[in-house]
Length: 93
Image (cartoon, rainbow, N blue to C red):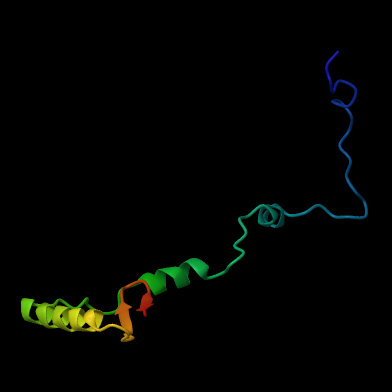
């Protein structure tokens, strides 16, 4: 005798009080749930490049390097560097 032999041939119960749910409503119950609506779109928009990345020629790079070396070699001097990338803004103190 199988595990469900006692109930396998029983008639299916249909409620008189509660009508049957439509197939569309039933499918909606099992549809994927997005807890954060619009989150993936916001992340994609934030990561999108909105301007071209600046390219330094040798003269600009040398001038920037000279300024940084002067600032680093000054003891007790506080400097603030703001570095912008396509993903975030970083502040170095």
